[in-house]
Length: 326
Image (cartoon, rainbow, N blue to C red):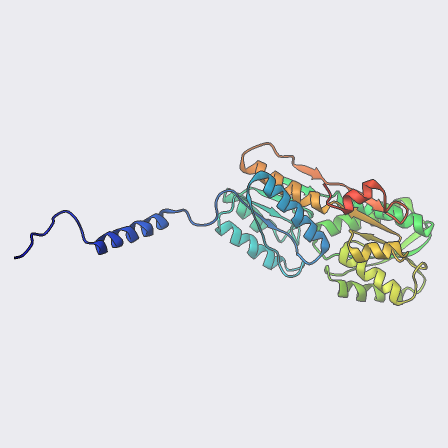
């Protein structure tokens, strides 16, 4: 005998299909890209100790605020086209805010302003951008940092002799400010010092070494060399070591890393201008989070710099900056 069919109860396969369709529709209805609580951080590079410490500060601020941080950087600090592509990708992913350390002060303006036009607040850190539209600029006062370096150079050389500069790269906002601060202060305050050359290292240690050795060859009686960032300073002190001119050619550098501090301790480097990279990363992300929530943000945040010498290396102030920076 045929049993009557039970009406109104679909077979199991139908339930499965409907459930699958429901999951599919739910997935399609979700907004694409990361949540609005994502902050993208785009530094110039990631090789230098400086950027690793910036990242630590950015991560700390992200955890404090309960937001997700995305970190992406070009392979080399002079690849501003690659950096612009990274920012463009974050715009397409609709992140909540972007923190940018521009590799070039004018080449990154267009993409940064494109983010702002898309409703994404932009915080500039470390190096300047030729735009007034970012919500905040968080960095060392690089011009004054260059002036500090010039005064140290005047002190260690006795204010006399020929000196030269190994710079960062053309178009680097932080480099241009530091190098201008250094040159202006030398010309204004140390008339016995003569700047005989400025060459760029493109933020590459090997290139900085070659440039510094060239300067030492062309000017055998060089009294001092200034390296205006971590890689430039490393190239400078190694060139001085290679030529056997430790103590003869005075060295002033910018930034700190383990090898720079060792060179300071052994007397190859006479002084370092040290920034607070942890605070740069931390305060930049904190400003971005504030902007997301429409809270007031300081337009300019000076994160400070200190002079480090063998004499004050172990002081509490210096150790605080060289440590976590908190």
